Every structure is written in structure tokens, then in C-alpha cells.
Length: 259
Image 1 (cartoon, rainbow, N blue to C red):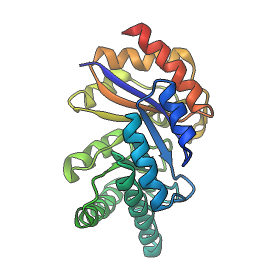
Image 2: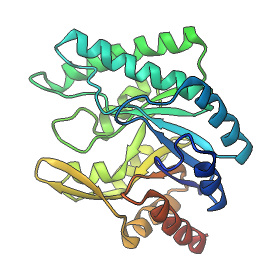
Image 3: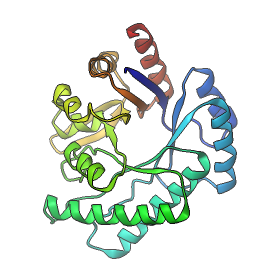
């Protein structure tokens, strides 16, 4: 199967016009951005959820950036989990599929110590989600700096050992590896997954990793989609560039030619 859903990040907001614009442009996916705080009211989440359902737009959420499930300061872990759960609560009313988040930082801990701390907190978050009967999955994201927890192998291990979903940010993978991404290696590790939730954009990076997102070049879109086709992937690709709607339109035109 080669099935790709495309959509922008952060262009809908709570505006009906925003989501109607996304639908009119031919997209069936979008990501609600809570990156600087969970700003949406419950009533608005319910309203937008019904609209998205009517427009047949599958929603996902990006939780706030201020999350570190491996912090040595307990109050920061507690605050991080509240931000994730607040995102999940809105996501449940939005009929969203996943809540994407950056899990944390290694700090002075080993990679294995960090992994075990984050795994423990994800399992605890899942208990709360189940108790609240929220219909949404957690999706730790591949991160763009070597100092951040969240390379592809770590997230795939979390998926296997906790049952969570993951978000594969191909731009972040490129930034972690100083611009050298081996797509055959990456897709060799994920080709067994029934569906993958992805982020993509241009990326500026240094030797330390990600610096900022850039507009997405056509050649990079073509490269990613060609590998998606090669490995018969079923995926949702959310564009996070400075012009997410415009770059999603660009990707849609390329995808239509490929099909």
C-alpha cells in the first residue's frame, strides 16, 4: 500500500474558516499546535472536533515544547505530564489521533537511564488516559539535537515496550545526523508499521543539531515521497515549515504526479 495523507501544522486554530481553507485546498489532515501552551478551551475543542469530522480532516496535536520527562527536578516532570495530559484532554474532544511531544533530555544521565525514566512516565500517562477514557495515543517524536532523547531507535523501542505511537520527524533525523539521512536504513526499520505519523520541512542545523525549520524544497519532498512509495508506506505527513499550507500544497502537487 502507498497511501499518503498530507496537511499543515498550525493553520486552523479555532477558526472555522481556517479548517475550511485546509479542506478546500484538498487536505485530509492537520496538526493543532499547542507548542507554547495548551491555549484551546474545551468548548472550542468540541466545536472544532465536530467541524473537522464533518470536513473529514484527521487531526493530531503537538504538545508544548516545555516537556522533560527525564528531568532530575520532580516538579518539572509533574508539570510536563500535566501539559501532555491537558493536550490529550483537548485531543479527545478534537477527535485527534495522537499527541506528539518531545520526551526529554539526557542531561548527565546515560541514554539507558534516560530511556527508563521516560518509559516509566509514559506508562503512567497511559494509565491516566485509560482511566479518563480518552480516545487518543501518545506519540513521542524523533528530535533534532543529539542532547535530546528521541532518536529513531529509542522511539521504536518505546513503541514496542509501551504500546505508544511515535512521530517520525524526517527533518529532525537529518539534523541529528549533520544532514546525512539514509532513507533506506530508516525505512528498513519502520516498513513493518501499519501507519506512520510524520513531520517534514526544510531544516537549518549546526554540528549540535537542529536550529530552525525552513521552507521545504521540492527536491527534498520528492526524495521523501519516492522512498515512501518504494516501501509502500501508509503515512500522514504534517508540514512544519514557516509556510506549512503553501508547502503542503507543493507536496500535494508532487504526490499527484507520482501517483
